[in-house]
Length: 197
Image (cartoon, rainbow, N blue to C red; front, side, top):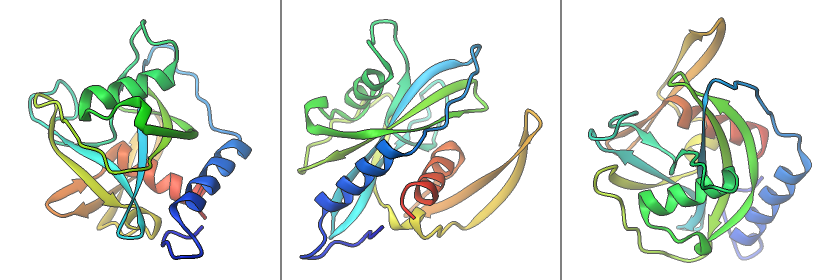
Protein backbone atom coordinates (compact mmCIF):
# COMPACT_ATOMS: atom_id res chain seq x y z
CA UNK A 1 0.00 0.00 0.00
CA UNK A 2 1.26 3.46 -0.85
CA UNK A 3 1.63 5.83 2.07
CA UNK A 4 2.66 8.88 0.07
CA UNK A 5 0.15 10.78 -2.00
CA UNK A 6 0.64 12.25 -5.47
CA UNK A 7 -1.54 13.49 -8.28
CA UNK A 8 -2.14 9.86 -9.28
CA UNK A 9 -2.71 8.49 -5.79
CA UNK A 10 -4.57 10.43 -3.17
CA UNK A 11 -5.93 10.15 0.35
CA UNK A 12 -9.21 8.95 -1.19
CA UNK A 13 -7.40 5.95 -2.68
CA UNK A 14 -5.68 5.23 0.63
CA UNK A 15 -9.03 5.25 2.45
CA UNK A 16 -10.66 3.09 -0.20
CA UNK A 17 -7.90 0.49 0.09
CA UNK A 18 -8.17 0.43 3.87
CA UNK A 19 -11.95 0.10 3.72
CA UNK A 20 -11.84 -2.76 1.21
CA UNK A 21 -9.08 -4.60 3.06
CA UNK A 22 -10.85 -4.33 6.42
CA UNK A 23 -14.12 -5.55 4.86
CA UNK A 24 -12.48 -8.54 3.18
CA UNK A 25 -10.36 -9.86 6.03
CA UNK A 26 -11.58 -11.90 9.00
CA UNK A 27 -10.99 -9.85 12.11
CA UNK A 28 -9.54 -11.48 15.19
CA UNK A 29 -12.11 -11.85 17.94
CA UNK A 30 -11.37 -12.79 21.53
CA UNK A 31 -13.42 -14.00 24.46
CA UNK A 32 -12.56 -12.53 27.85
CA UNK A 33 -15.93 -12.15 29.59
CA UNK A 34 -14.42 -10.82 32.82
CA UNK A 35 -12.57 -8.02 31.05
CA UNK A 36 -14.10 -4.55 30.81
CA UNK A 37 -15.27 -3.68 27.28
CA UNK A 38 -13.81 -0.58 25.65
CA UNK A 39 -13.28 0.89 22.19
CA UNK A 40 -10.69 3.05 20.48
CA UNK A 41 -10.65 5.00 17.22
CA UNK A 42 -7.64 4.79 14.89
CA UNK A 43 -8.20 8.05 13.06
CA UNK A 44 -6.33 8.94 9.86
CA UNK A 45 -5.92 12.31 8.16
CA UNK A 46 -3.93 13.71 5.26
CA UNK A 47 -1.05 15.99 6.18
CA UNK A 48 1.95 16.95 4.03
CA UNK A 49 0.76 14.47 1.36
CA UNK A 50 1.01 11.56 3.77
CA UNK A 51 -1.35 9.73 6.14
CA UNK A 52 -1.08 10.73 9.78
CA UNK A 53 -2.80 9.14 12.75
CA UNK A 54 -4.38 11.02 15.64
CA UNK A 55 -3.03 10.16 19.09
CA UNK A 56 -3.12 11.96 22.41
CA UNK A 57 -0.83 12.35 25.39
CA UNK A 58 -2.82 11.64 28.52
CA UNK A 59 -2.52 13.76 31.65
CA UNK A 60 -1.31 12.50 35.00
CA UNK A 61 -4.83 13.06 36.37
CA UNK A 62 -6.55 10.18 34.56
CA UNK A 63 -7.28 6.93 36.39
CA UNK A 64 -5.32 4.69 34.00
CA UNK A 65 -2.44 5.06 31.54
CA UNK A 66 -1.20 8.28 33.13
CA UNK A 67 1.17 10.22 30.89
CA UNK A 68 0.94 7.68 28.08
CA UNK A 69 0.19 8.19 24.39
CA UNK A 70 -3.03 6.54 23.27
CA UNK A 71 -5.83 6.46 20.73
CA UNK A 72 -9.02 8.37 21.51
CA UNK A 73 -11.28 5.89 23.26
CA UNK A 74 -12.56 4.51 26.51
CA UNK A 75 -14.97 2.24 28.31
CA UNK A 76 -18.27 1.03 26.92
CA UNK A 77 -21.29 2.63 28.56
CA UNK A 78 -24.62 0.83 28.79
CA UNK A 79 -26.23 3.75 26.95
CA UNK A 80 -24.04 3.02 23.89
CA UNK A 81 -25.89 1.04 21.23
CA UNK A 82 -22.66 -0.71 20.16
CA UNK A 83 -18.89 -0.52 20.48
CA UNK A 84 -18.55 1.79 17.47
CA UNK A 85 -20.74 4.31 19.28
CA UNK A 86 -18.41 3.98 22.26
CA UNK A 87 -15.40 4.86 20.10
CA UNK A 88 -17.18 7.83 18.50
CA UNK A 89 -18.52 9.12 21.83
CA UNK A 90 -15.17 8.85 23.56
CA UNK A 91 -13.41 10.56 20.64
CA UNK A 92 -15.82 13.46 20.97
CA UNK A 93 -15.46 13.62 24.76
CA UNK A 94 -11.65 13.44 24.71
CA UNK A 95 -10.65 15.56 21.72
CA UNK A 96 -13.87 17.30 20.65
CA UNK A 97 -14.31 15.76 17.19
CA UNK A 98 -17.98 15.54 16.22
CA UNK A 99 -18.88 12.00 15.05
CA UNK A 100 -20.31 13.56 11.88
CA UNK A 101 -16.75 14.56 10.92
CA UNK A 102 -15.51 10.97 11.02
CA UNK A 103 -15.74 8.66 8.02
CA UNK A 104 -15.80 5.16 9.48
CA UNK A 105 -13.67 2.82 7.36
CA UNK A 106 -14.17 -0.41 9.26
CA UNK A 107 -13.27 -2.47 12.29
CA UNK A 108 -9.87 -3.97 13.04
CA UNK A 109 -8.89 -6.79 15.44
CA UNK A 110 -9.80 -7.04 19.11
CA UNK A 111 -7.15 -6.79 21.83
CA UNK A 112 -6.75 -7.28 25.56
CA UNK A 113 -4.73 -5.05 27.83
CA UNK A 114 -2.90 -5.91 31.01
CA UNK A 115 -5.18 -3.37 32.72
CA UNK A 116 -8.10 -5.77 32.21
CA UNK A 117 -9.73 -4.23 29.13
CA UNK A 118 -11.16 -6.02 26.10
CA UNK A 119 -10.55 -3.44 23.36
CA UNK A 120 -12.46 -3.04 20.09
CA UNK A 121 -10.52 -1.11 17.43
CA UNK A 122 -12.29 1.00 14.79
CA UNK A 123 -10.66 2.79 11.88
CA UNK A 124 -11.82 6.16 10.59
CA UNK A 125 -10.71 9.22 8.65
CA UNK A 126 -11.01 12.98 8.83
CA UNK A 127 -11.66 14.48 5.41
CA UNK A 128 -11.00 18.07 6.36
CA UNK A 129 -9.12 20.00 8.98
CA UNK A 130 -11.05 20.17 12.26
CA UNK A 131 -10.58 22.12 15.44
CA UNK A 132 -9.68 19.97 18.42
CA UNK A 133 -11.20 20.70 21.82
CA UNK A 134 -9.28 18.44 24.20
CA UNK A 135 -10.68 17.54 27.59
CA UNK A 136 -8.32 19.33 29.98
CA UNK A 137 -8.59 16.68 32.70
CA UNK A 138 -7.71 13.83 30.34
CA UNK A 139 -5.62 15.15 27.46
CA UNK A 140 -2.30 16.94 27.82
CA UNK A 141 -1.52 17.20 24.10
CA UNK A 142 -2.96 16.07 20.77
CA UNK A 143 -0.49 14.46 18.36
CA UNK A 144 -0.76 14.03 14.59
CA UNK A 145 1.84 11.32 14.02
CA UNK A 146 3.09 10.24 10.57
CA UNK A 147 1.83 6.72 9.92
CA UNK A 148 5.16 5.97 8.21
CA UNK A 149 6.73 5.72 11.67
CA UNK A 150 4.78 2.49 12.24
CA UNK A 151 4.58 1.33 8.63
CA UNK A 152 8.38 1.29 8.40
CA UNK A 153 8.65 0.07 12.01
CA UNK A 154 11.05 2.82 13.05
CA UNK A 155 10.91 1.85 16.70
CA UNK A 156 13.80 2.53 19.06
CA UNK A 157 13.64 -0.84 20.72
CA UNK A 158 11.46 -3.91 21.16
CA UNK A 159 11.21 -5.75 24.46
CA UNK A 160 9.76 -9.19 25.14
CA UNK A 161 7.26 -9.52 27.97
CA UNK A 162 5.24 -12.48 29.20
CA UNK A 163 1.61 -12.00 30.22
CA UNK A 164 -0.83 -14.76 31.12
CA UNK A 165 1.52 -17.38 29.75
CA UNK A 166 2.06 -15.71 26.37
CA UNK A 167 5.00 -13.72 25.03
CA UNK A 168 4.41 -10.28 23.54
CA UNK A 169 6.57 -7.76 21.73
CA UNK A 170 6.54 -4.30 23.30
CA UNK A 171 7.57 -1.63 20.79
CA UNK A 172 8.86 1.81 21.74
CA UNK A 173 8.57 4.60 19.17
CA UNK A 174 9.71 8.18 19.63
CA UNK A 175 7.77 11.11 18.20
CA UNK A 176 9.07 14.50 19.30
CA UNK A 177 9.30 14.40 23.07
CA UNK A 178 6.74 11.60 23.36
CA UNK A 179 7.23 7.84 23.56
CA UNK A 180 4.56 5.66 21.95
CA UNK A 181 4.55 2.18 23.42
CA UNK A 182 2.29 -0.47 24.94
CA UNK A 183 -1.01 -1.39 23.32
CA UNK A 184 -1.10 1.69 21.09
CA UNK A 185 2.27 0.87 19.52
CA UNK A 186 1.36 -2.82 19.21
CA UNK A 187 -1.95 -2.08 17.46
CA UNK A 188 -0.33 0.32 14.98
CA UNK A 189 2.53 -2.07 14.23
CA UNK A 190 0.15 -5.01 13.78
CA UNK A 191 -2.17 -2.90 11.62
CA UNK A 192 0.64 -1.85 9.30
CA UNK A 193 1.72 -5.48 8.91
CA UNK A 194 -1.71 -7.10 8.52
CA UNK A 195 -3.68 -4.44 6.64
CA UNK A 196 -1.21 -2.17 4.86
CA UNK A 197 1.38 -4.57 3.40
